[in-house]
Image (cartoon, rainbow, N blue to C red; front, side):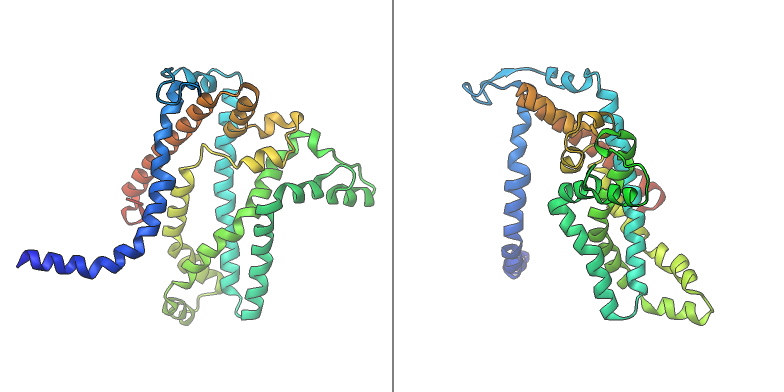
Length: 306
């Protein structure tokens, strides 16, 4: 009888298996099969011999990253920029989502969404060109405004002190629109009776945001933050390489692990060293996610990923 019940359950679940199959195959082919390439990080690749027959290098490929004179600089830049990105993007996305939720007119909401999302989508595609249009020494918008006001113009592409703020702003502009949609969906999922009850009790608009909206967004913030921590040792290559136009004068402010490895790959042509850096980034990200999730589970078990 148990066998018949099991077969019946499997038969009923066949449509679900068929629906899941494309996503599962994509995950398998795109995420798991390429993991075989991790062996490249531990070999001196010789394409005439092939990957498997190339000489074993052990951990020597990792020395390129750890013994580099700029190892501390690129690690510091990668970590600090990503921490700033997480904090600024989270705050900006929540503010945008709350503003959208507070606007009652559907027409205004659509207009506001367009104002937020369209620049984000455009910047994802041509962010370096837009940044250059604003920051160019001669024709840039910022210098045009300064010149019009009788102020001295700024040579942005030779002055590294401006770039931490520029990169944080551009990253926020690019990502805040998308993230705000996630927070807006979470806000719309909040039981409206809670707001009605608070209004009856005399709560102001700010009071409802402070005591209802923000606490109810806690789980979403924690989930997105945990996912972001997994890539804290990675950097947006286009943001750090293309936006500063690979300017040598800005290296100290814009050099991260990804751009450093890319420059090393271009100069040395050593794929094994680049693969070792990617393995290092992945392992550190994995450990950080486990650690952050464990801390979350200790203090707020219901919001942990696993």
